[in-house]
Length: 165
Image (cartoon, rainbow, N blue to C red):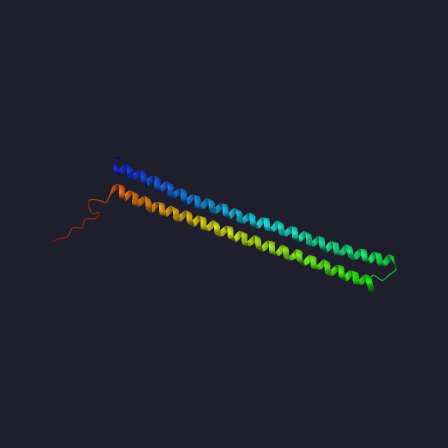
């Protein structure tokens, strides 16, 4: 059997290394989740920007439609701001604005989803770091208990109190 002091030193050393590893693993996982949180925000910003671009395209289409209605009415010697041409303009504008509002709402929802995903990932990262700390502390406790079992209790009290008669 190995010398109790050597065995205790080995047990404590490996326990400390294991605890440090568990702590570091939790921190690394936290950084990974924080990176995922940043990526979720960037992705949602990009997708929201694409929706906003679609909204601009809808507005451009409304303007083009109104210009075409005006041009055709003018070519036919009809007042473009009354009667059927005006009715077509109102209809085209109403339909287009409805599409525009949908793209605006989509962009807003995408941004909110990105924020929620970011929050979820940051919370997962905090939990990973917490679990790493708990695992490290548990390992340290087990190491202390193992060291106690190997070396056994001290034979003499640590503080000897001398009482005067």
